[in-house]
Image (cartoon, rainbow, N blue to C red):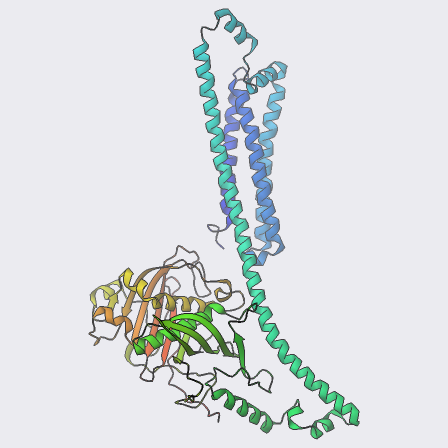
Length: 550
């Protein structure tokens, strides 16, 4: 975290400004003659300011103590903590020296000066002033009252300024507390996700333990060794499989899964540990499912593909359930509820990821769910994790392009179309593409995909289509092959970004390809000239048929 963003340095700067003003006022106080009434007034202000600054330093030390318990979480090390402790100690010494000097100055002025200070603080006239007042019989009442009124107004103004500064410091310290609170909430969410994964693993481990218990029990009862007991046991009770048995169990499991294309297979249990699909019910109360931000946007992407191909406008109503493979790069089989005006349907969407922590995925299925009496038909053999993509040609295959020059955006209108703000706000899928890129690049236990999406602001959107594409500009939005160039702010940091800060204008390049078979492939990357980044997207590979499962 840079010093410009670190709350410690923000509060430190405020406190240091207050100390500098305090020392400047103290030097002026030292030059004031004890015979002048202003010295007592300034002394009172100095003592009050010292107390205020000492309180601020105390609060800052408390924040340092909290950070010292887990320095790595706040992005600092022991050297930085020691540096901060030295600064607070030095600041406290400066304030203590000023306070001691003021108090010592009061004592050294003698009893006469002390009485003068007390009179000043109590706003009481001295005896000479009282005698003159009696002598002239109140002829100077108006002048005296006006002078006292001016002095009271000045004191009130100075107190207001001090209270304003104190309020700003308290607000900044409160901001630090809110940041800590947000981090704790994010940690709680991550723990909930981990608990869900642990439950799934626990169920599989219990299955293995039961099998082992049965083997040991039968082996002990018959006086056989473990190997002999395994030979005499039925096939369904064995824990260890031969290579042929293992392959047969796997084929049978995936054959059952393939009957519903991977969507309605919750009742089919894999007899082999850590092989098969994980099942999640999105409607079950009190239980969380992993990566809810990503799953929702995968569902939206599937509806987006269906709407482009069918000319409809279905929108997501609710997630019902989903299955996923046990990989870092997974395949998702999502069942959802969608609506279009007064029409509501159940949809099935399949999304296959190809690279971890990259936006490189394919929507292979996006369709209304078949009726129970209508058989599910697959065009190709069922492959649990599909490692291909939509077929493309020309500039829409191979690595993603570099960011075009401003001149190309402006001059080559046959290929580039700059969207008006109202256009990309009305589509919805521009923001969806950008959110998928942000989530895909920051996966993991502590990534954005777990902690929550930032509030990004899109500044500019340009779409590139094929040179021979002479469709009207507004129809290019639904072009099957397109590069989308997005400029935005609001993303403070990400593993693939160099400069940190929500104010930084960032660039994203996203490719959309829909081939004749209806597959939609989405690829994307961040672009930064400062990092010397070049095209980093993976090469497009031809669609792989893969081994036939049944």
